[in-house]
Length: 386
Image (cartoon, rainbow, N blue to C red; front, side, top):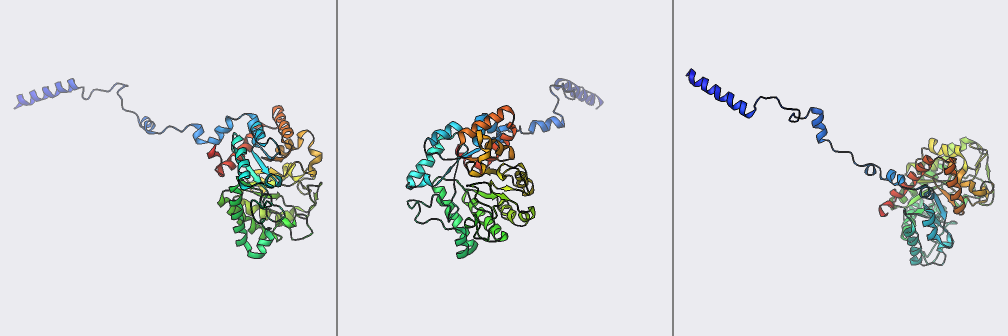
C-alpha cells in the first residue's frame, strides 16, 4: 500500500513539473492588478468636439468669422446675400421695405437666398409686435389683416387671446423663413401720452409680466426666437430714434415695476434681450443704456440673464455722438452686448476687428459672445441644418 502511495506521489510531482503548476508567473503573464483591471474596462473619453461641439466650432473660426457672428444687421437693398458671405454675418433683420409688395414665394426666395449664402445659418428677424409696429403682415399679399396691437387683443380676450396671437404670429413668420421676432415689448406704460404706450400692453407691471411670460412660452413652443425689449424699461421717455432721452427715475421704480416683465420673460426662457438707448441716470449718467457696462451688469447679475444681449439699432439719432468711425460697435461690445444691431455694418465690423487686433477688446470676450449666439442658433435648430 505504501509502495502504491509513493508511486502516485511521484507521478503527481512529475505532472506538476511538466505543466508548470504552482510555478510563479512572469511579469508578462501576471494578471492585471485591481486598478489595471478597472482601466481595461473603462471607456475612453469621447473627443473634445463630441463633448462640446460649439467650442470646437469656435476654435476653428477665424477672428473675422467670429466678429461677423456678433452683427445682426439691417438687410441692405442691394447685395444682401453677398454681404452675408463676405462679412460672415450672424443675423439679418428685415424691415417693411423688404416685405412690401412681395408675394409669399418672393419672401421665401429672399430668406432662402440669405441662408444659402451663410457659412453658419443666419438669424433672420423682423419686428412683428402687432398694432403700430408690423413689418410682414403690413403686406396684404402676405396676410389679409395686420396683426392687432397687444392692447386690443388683451381687451378682447385676455391672456388667451394673446397666446393665440403669439402662436399664429410665430407660425406666419416661420413660414416666411423668419426665425426671430423682435417681440414682445416688455415696457410698462399706462399713460397714453407716453411715446412707447401704443406698443405696450398698457397695463401695470404685474399684468405686463403675465403677458410677457405667456408670449415667450408660446414663441418657444413654436420654435421662434423672441427678444425682450427695451431694457431696462422705456417708461415715459422720449423717442430715441430722433434724439437723446434722459431717464431720471430712481432705481427703486425699476426694481418695483420696469424689471418685473423682463424677469418674467427670462424665467419663461426668453433667449435674447434688447437694450435701449435711453440714458438711465440712476444706473449710468455718462452713456446710453445700450453702451453702458453697469446696465449690462444689472441685467446679468441682478436679473440673472444668461442669453444673448443685443443693442437697439446703432443708426438711431440718440447715438450720433458715439458713432464716428465705428466707435459705437466697439463701445457696445465692451459694455457687454453679444450682438450689435446696425445698418452701417461694414464700418462697424472694421472698427471691431481693429479693436480686437490692438487688444482693446479681448478675443476671449468675443468667444464668449459667439458661444451665446451659436447656442441661440442651436436652440432654434439652425446649426443642425449647417
